[in-house]
Length: 163
Image (tube, rainbow, N blue to C red; front, side, top):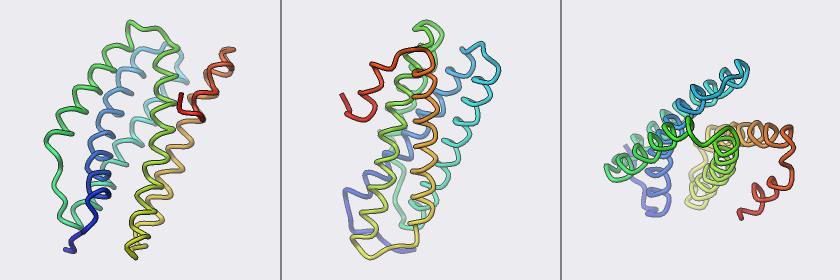
């Protein structure tokens, strides 16, 4: 087992690991709350992708002996469960919008990890981090397209601007 002397990267890995749990929980409620069967299937697949990302991030953390943050685990579990429950009461738009925003941030997160690893001369995670970032981009596009098809195009600007 190697050690990793990059505090910002360590925190980013710990946060990503726990945030994937929050996303997975949120998608459970989101999938259960939608009526359209195709949307339900797509959102469940996205949930599965998030659980897989969590597993991959844990593999990287274990390689460097990075502990799981109990604080992040608690915090993100509460966030995920809260979002999951709220999907039943806030209508269709908000879950799709915030899922798209979340996925947009995740794309950057995985590419930042790759960049941090590269800065310290580690390239063996490039492929998996790139793949996870691209999968998050697919998720973002899915949610953005759902909003676009519903005629809410004016709101889509905030996906890329971060507003």
